[in-house]
Structures are given as structure tokens and as C-alpha cells.
Image (cartoon, rainbow, N blue to C red; front, side, top):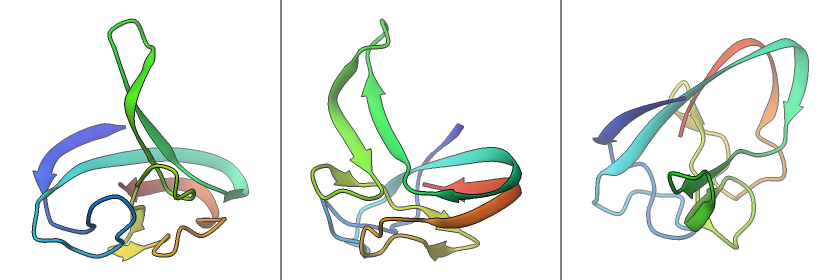
Length: 96
């Protein structure tokens, strides 16, 4: 996982899956799947220096957290907080 900084406006606050006029934090997550698997969700938590979860968190699926927009090749995989992001195999790069 790599933090790329603030850049393109892709999503809005809380559950809004569309741009809101503000730059968004941008990460890339590179994962290798040795065979095709279904990826149900991605979740991002803010941690303190001891590795304990703090109050900030983002989920790709559930509406009980800030929306974590998951993109692949520029297409959002979870505009409605779907139960699955899709099936993937090999090296996969997600933009979140």
C-alpha cells in the first residue's frame, strides 16, 4: 500500500460516491492473488503509533463508515457499496 497524497476529486463525504469539489486522499494497494478470488470489501483504519484503531475509518461496503471508493482502471467498483468488488487473479492494483 502506498499513499500518493491529495489529488483528484472522486468521492464526496460520508456515503456520497460522486465528486464534491474537494481533493481526496489517494492510496494504491497492490495485491497478488495466486488464483482468481472474490474480493468482498476493503477497509481502511487510522491507527496510532501503537497500532491501535482510532476513530477514523473507511469501508468499501457498509454505510456505518466513511465511503472508501475503490477504483480499477478509473472505474469505481463500489458506487452503491456493493457486497463484492469482483473477482480477481494475479497482480491487481486498486486505487482507493
